[in-house]
Image (tube, rainbow, N blue to C red; front, side):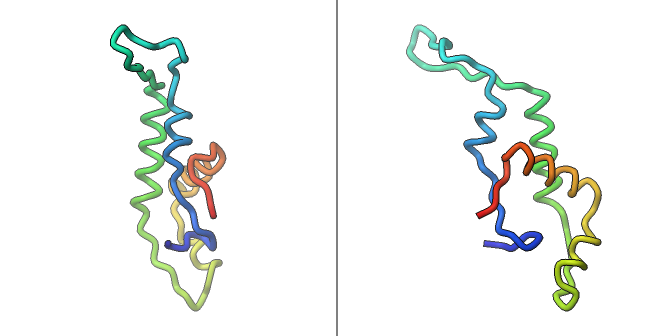
Length: 93
């Protein structure tokens, strides 16, 4: 597990699925399968924020510690990370 900003974080896939799901429990079709409806705006925003978080390239100077890491992080990463953390789509151990 990798340490990110002093904590170990993971992407909660079940929480993302329930966050995007707009279907109700009465969506059974004749064949017995269920149909899932998602909010496309939420889907695209979550996809874009996860892309920003997962593709951030950060060089950390171990001698300076956490202070160095927090000053080199880009603004899009901070917004995406905090938004996903606020909606509990990423969690820490």
